[in-house]
Amino acid sequence: MSSAAEDTKPAMPVRAPLTAGMSFVKLAPWIYTIALFALWELLVIALDMPQTILPAPSRVFQAIVQYWSPIWKNSLQTLYTTTVGFAIAVVAGLGLGLFIGWSKTIYAGLYPLMIGFNAIPKVALVPILVIWFGIGAVPAILTAFLISFFPIVVNVATGLATIEPETEDVLRALGAKKLDIMLKVGIPRSMPYFFGSLKVAITLAFVGSVVSETVASNYGLGNMMSSAQSQFNVPLVFAGLLMLAVEGIAMYALMAWIERRMTGWAHRSTMSH
Image (cartoon, rainbow, N blue to C red; front, side, top):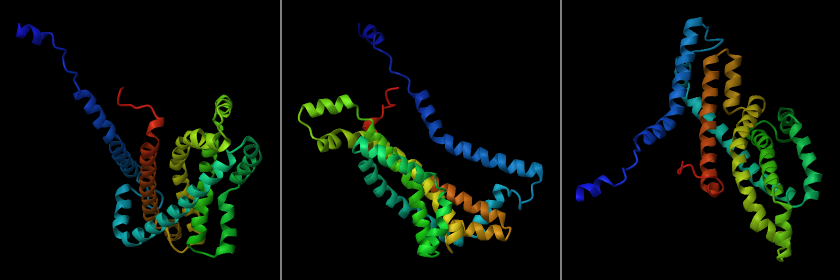
């Protein structure tokens, strides 16, 4: 009897293929990155490309080792200006986004102005910032702030604008005031939009810092790459680009982690699939 009972027990699900698939997904970024560098190296060798045009990855890594001290110092400077500008953009963008999304009248009045401001190339503002604040870290911080500010404002205001009119009518009928609706429904509704916008804003903040450092600073990766370009030290230019990519990926990953931690309730779980 016992053997018959054991035969009727449901078989345990096989998890090995799922585990292997998840492991490959985690390794996929590294695999694709290595493949990209390998293809780059082979193309440079096959086409006999001069390093003043396109240096091979091996030459770029040599430049990183050779110029590690200035690369490290300038990377920290760029990370500092980007982080400060981005932090200001987060605070100001969240506040202004909540203000714009507070009512449809404010939204209709200020949103076109925000679009017009965002249409102005931020590079054109750098000379003005230099006149006001001089050459240094301040123009880079402000450029990072200005270029990353708009996505945060738009996403927060959009999140508030997604409140259905029927929901507002029901809550008002139950005695809720405008502030209650915003605190209980509006702000929680806008949080996924807000934290999602941070991933876009942080990458734009790096763009703003580097653009400003190229023309209005004596420090930072932008200034370093500009100086290297004037000396035709192309491997150092690509080394600076590579460091920017590393910093950008790291900060993007941090924002994505914060988004998952803070708004996991708003996303469908993938564990059940």
